Structure formats: C-alpha cells, structure tokens
Image (cartoon, rainbow, N blue to C red; front, side):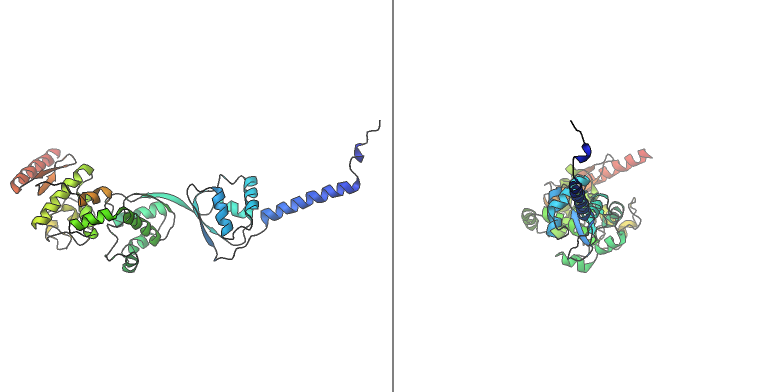
Length: 342
C-alpha cells in the first residue's frame, strides 16, 4: 500500500486554498481598517447613555451614517471583545474612522464621561460654581456668569435677575466639560418637573408667586437643616408676613456677607440692602440660595400655630415663642449656653 502525503492536494488545489486565504485576509483587513465616511458636520458629537445596550449604540451609529453596515460592525466588535467594554460618555467622532478605530475610540476615549454631581439643599450659585469646576471640569466663572445672564434666563421663560433659587437640589449624571447653558438648564428643568400644577394652585391660594415661595423656602433652609422643623419655621414667617412684621431673618443678612458666614453683629443688621429683612419689611427681592424639596414644601404648607419668634436652642434646633417676652427668655437661655461653651 502506497502512502504518499505529498499528493493529498494537487498544485491547482493548493493555489485555490492560497487565494481563498488571501481573499479572507484582505477582506478582514478591509473590514477592520478601511475608513468609513459620514455626511454630517464633523467632528460628530455622539453620546452613549448610561445603561445603553451595544445593540442600541450600533443602531444609532448606523442611522447617523457613521457605520455603513451594522452586522459587520457587530462582528468586528465581537472579535475585538468590545461589546461589554464601551463606556457611557460623550464622544467626538472624526470622519473617516475604520470600524476598528471607532471601537478603539468608544472603549479608550478620549471622551467626556458621565460624572455624578449633587446640588445640595441651600447651596448658592457661587458655591455651586466651584463644585462644577471640580466635578465636571467646567469653567466656574463662565457658569456663574451664565447663571446671571439676562438673555439666557429669559430664554428659559423666567423674568428674574439670576437663577439663584431655581437650580433644584438633587443628584445628577452630567457629562464632563458640558456647556454652562446645558447644565443650568438641566438643573432648572428638575425644578419645573417638581413644581406641579398642585403646587402652583397652593401658591395661588397663599397669594404668593413661585418666586416668592422659592425666596421664602431659601430663608427656611438657611435657618435649619432639620426637616421636621421647617414647617414650624415657615409658620413663623407666614405669621409675621400676615401681621406686617419684619421677618428679621439672619440668613438674609448672612447672604450679604462678602467673606461668607459669620456671627452677626449689630452693625451687620443695619446694612442697607433690600435683602436685609431687619431693615425692610416683607420678603427680600430674590432667593438667597437654592432650596430643596423639603424647604419648598414647608414654604407652601406651613405649620399652623401662634409663634412669632424663635431662637437656636444650642442643640441644633430652635425654641419658639408666641410673644416677645417669652422670646427674650429663650434668648437669655441661649446666650447662657454660649457662655458655658466658652
């Protein structure tokens, strides 16, 4: 029996196999490295959202004309092991990227990634500007200026001097290096979503505008971090407003202090500003911070009582009084507590 392995394939058969492999290699090279061009403004800004599936990403890339073939892209992604590696971010896709270059961009960047940021209850625009610089890598000065830009504020449908009070307190997922207009609109849209028709009807029943409610809420938040105390403090201010008394709210004077919070002196209480509620009656002209849901609801739904005064109790809360003599007693007790701390 003859065993001649060299004759398994003929010369022509070997040539056929060679050309098949050559075609596969060239086809693979073409699929992986051939540039794909789109007919949109470049570079194209493309966002991958948190939790979005790779199939959804592929569909959107194809619909925009960035990739000509969905199946080929998914096959290349499978070979590349990219389907589970693509991250939520905002990418700038240059024209003429191959499938492989595009996948490399979506996995390794550069890109602006989603970051968590929280607008804290009672945070001012000034402090928030520092936070967006740190957490979102934004220009804090541009953010602050845009929050006071009359034309931009008007474009949101508001007729106010600044967005102080209108940036809703909650946690957000926002792309790095976003434009100030985009971020401010996200914060304000959250307030619009929170401010339902029911809340507007409640404000109407109190003969107060949304702006006045936000202003009062910002003062309430400035007075306490204790959620259960907010409706009672709100009740004090509503009682004072009804009776025509000055609010005499320390947070409105603190708002005027150039170097931040300090223990107020008698001279501080005489500063001439419409925000000084020791000097002028009624609510100040605008919010002094950005209040959260609890303070806003407290402003809308005050506790019903006969208290007109309150002072800190030294334990993080306040003592309330129905008349001035009772209030003076509480003040003396608080001052005694302060001396004991020294």
